[in-house]
Structure formats: C-alpha cells, structure tokens
Length: 632
Image 1 (cartoon, helix red, strand yellow):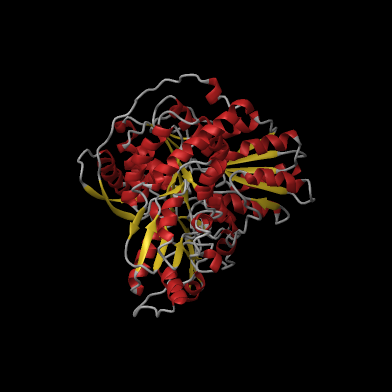
Image 2 (cartoon, rainbow, N blue to C red):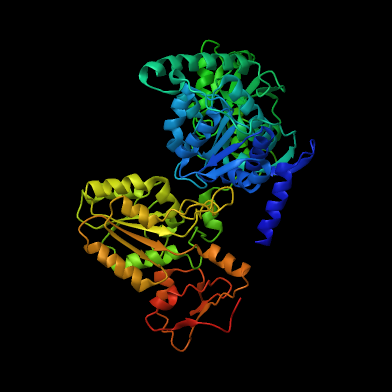
C-alpha cells in the first residue's frame, strides 16, 4: 500500500501541476487525464474497463482538489447520459470506457449527436487490438462513421494530452460530442509529456430548454439530422487544413498513410529497411480529409496503408482516390492482417516481402504465442490464492456433480474455466449470463446456472433477472460478491457504497435489489463455508422457479491489504505429513496456487496462503490444519 500511496502522490502533483513546460513520463491514459484537467473538465464519468481504467482512476484521486465531480457510473450508457446532462448545462464533461463499453453507450451517443451539446463533451474509447483484456477486438473507428461524429486518434502520450484539450474546444465550437479513440499500446505506454496551462471553465451551468433541439421525437429528429450533417461538413473543411494531420517528407516514389500507434511502427520499419518514403499521418480520422489524401496520393506510384484491425483508412482512401490510378496496398492485398496488434517487426517483415528487400542484420522478429508456448512453461491466468470465487466454484462442482450448464460472465470469475475447476460453458458480454441461461433453460433439460459478479450484476444483469421472473425461467443465478470491481483495479460500485469522490454514499444491497426484481428464493452465503454454500445450491436445484444465491466474501487481495494496514497477522494453513495420504484432492480438485508439490510431497506456501481455510474443509483425511507457528 505504501507503493500505491507514493504513486498516487506523484500522480497528484503531476496532474495538478501549474508549472507550464515541465516534462513528465506519463501513460497515455494519465496524459488524457492531465489534458482533461488542462481543458477545464468539471464532470468525469466512467465504467471501468481495461485499457481505459487509469484515465478515470487518476481523475478520481485528484477530483476534489481539481474541483471536478467524478463518478463510477453503473454502466457505460449511464456514464454517457450523466456526462451529457452536465454538458447540456454548459459544463465540460468527459466520459471514458473500453471499446466494448461503447456498445453499451451507443444508444445514447448516436442520438446525442443529433441534439448536440453545449459544454465540451469528449468520449474516450480505448480499443484493445490483440484482445489483451477483452472478449473481442472490435474497431471503434466505425462508431465515428455510424454516429457521424468527429474522431481523434493520438499516437503517443503528448498527443493524447494536447489533442484532448483541442477536442473540448472543438466540441464547444460545433456543439457536438467528440470521440477520442486510443488503443492499448497508446493507453499503456509511458512517454514524455510537456505540461500545459490549466484553463478555467464553467463550474456550474444552467439548462436552457429547447424542445425542438433536445426532445428527439421523429419530426424534430429529422431536422437535427440535417443540422448534424451541416456541422460535419464544416468540420471536414477544418480537418483538411488541420495540424493534426502531418506529412513527413522522405521520398518521391513510395507513400504511406497511417494513424495512431501504427504511425510509430511504420516510422521504425521504414528506418530499419532504409526506405525512402513520405508519410501522411492522420490525426482526425473522421470526418476524413479527402482532399488532403488525394493531393498526397497522386504524388506516388504506390501507397501503403498501415492500420490495426479493420481497413477503415484503406477503404476510405480507395473511395477518395478511385480515379487517380495509384496502387493502394493494404489489408485487401493481404499486406497486413485484419486481426491482432501490429508491431515494428510485423510491418518490417511485410514491407520487406512486398518490396523484395532483405531484412536488416540482427533483425529480431516477434515471437508468436505458439512459439512462446514451446519455449516457456504454460502460465495461464488463474484465480488468486484465497479467492472466494474458487470456493464458490468448488461448491458448484461438488453439489451439482457436473450435471449443470454454467453460463459465466465478464470478471475475475471468468478464470473459473481453468483446470481443475472448469466452470464456464458460455461467455458473451456483460450481463449475458442471465439472459442466455434463460434461453438455455427453455431449450433443454439440464439445470442451468448463471454466474455473475457484483459489479457486473449492477451493470447489466438486472433486466435479465426480471425477465427470468416474468417468464418463470428455472435458472440458478449465483452472484459472486467480492465487494469490488476487482478485475479492472478494485474500483467501487453501488454495492460498496464508496463513490468516485472517495466518499461513503448509500450502499445498494444486492439481495434487496434481487428481491425487488421479484425473486422469491434468495440465499446469502459465505463461500468460505463450503457446506453452507453446497446446501444452498442443493435447495436452489429443487426450487421450481428462478432462484438467486449471493456468495459474499471480500476479494482476498483487498482483505489481505486491510489486515496489513490494521497490523493484523495472517494465519496460514499447513499440511500434516503424518495424516496426508497423498490423495492430492487439495491440488486436483481445488487448485489453489498456494498448495504445491515437490518430490511427491504436498505443502502449502506460507507466503501465498491467505488463511481462507477452504482447503481444510475439503481434505478427506483432515490433514490440513491452521498453523499458528507461521504468522506473517
């Protein structure tokens, strides 16, 4: 905790610094947070999700001192609605989320493009090429096209900070929401950032009614769509001459068009291969600067398009330059893949192949996942030692004996699919465990279990649960309440009562919400109590309608930190060699990382054991006992 305290102190000084011209190493996400402060943001909303989490977390830490209201909203669409409401009062607002979060928020955003805003409103979408922490790698540049909104794509931390300031100004000038797209590599890369001045903006606004603008019934919406189109035409003209689009001169035969993190890889690849080429780097990718692109493309015989994921730029360039007769080389030519994260190595090899150039001496190629697996021992992500979810999964396996179908959800507990627990047959998106369980229950005879976390429950599961009640779907919903949004950084949620401003607000009790949804069979258990949890599951199996079990126990990492802060000792468990029959049940059935084997002997690592006591309950020979001789 001392380390976190120091990091937060340093972050606070940098984010609030008024020493213009200072340079600091910042993550792209921290740079966005600093940029929002420089722009005079007053309202910040989010639902946490990697790779976007550090933006709002950083602002939450300094919100009070910066005069910002910050909240962790129930989900992404609520986050956008709250920020939009503030913006419509003339206050500058920021909402940030990961790429799949924009799917949730899109319903509000697309219509908000029609109404427009008053105070500057920027929505940051952090995309995840390569699926480093996500269930898909969708390309959210297409949301700019779908919603017809301006979209920026920075390539480094300095641009992320500077451009977010401009995005707020542009938003206010044209009264439009602005999309600000980053990717994992930009969000999570440290780079030097020069601090700029902090501008003052409205602290409090006023909502001025305008029914024809803000009430989107069909008649008014049609007129607002025309207004949106006209605004975007004006912004397109601006983008043709924008300084965010840069040409780096370097050759007369080959041209490159790129944006974002791909620009960095392209520059390095060209340098490694010794290619003479010029590069057009696009900073505002929508509305597309067609004339700028035409003027650039017609200078060359061949133009390479370098971008991650979908051929968004490539297709737009082709549409803009179809009559120029220039060869456009991109994903449609299999120059680069449509999936995964790019790198200098990938682009260097692709260019060398197309241009017939040898790879540079001492060239180090990226190692594929398959090659890594051959070199290194497997190290899959696993549940932490003492994780209460492991105890819940063990109870599910023991009581249901594999006869059930397990619909799991987005969170730490998705790791239950690993050996030896192997809990999780279906995972789609936030909250889908409940809805899909309803459909499965009506389509086959096996019991169906919906597994969902506390934060995810508040985010997206409540409508599905109401649906289960309304249509009497016989499903068992197990809500794993570890008192935090643990997977993305332990952010608070309505079930904790702690707010983004660091204050203790009203705690929303999960079982009370469940009861309000109409569920009649509800039990709250401690997953560390294996028998209690198993018995509750057996009763739920027999219940003729939808039932809910709330398995409540604080995340083991949080619990351990709290004990340390309070000066309390953690009492680990140990294996009694004389009693151990080496049945390996503790290893093969529970799979706790604190339980290991060495030369046929089973032992508990005191440095990892959190003292949860679940292993003691499952040992058939009572060979696991508490060890008061080893305290830490």
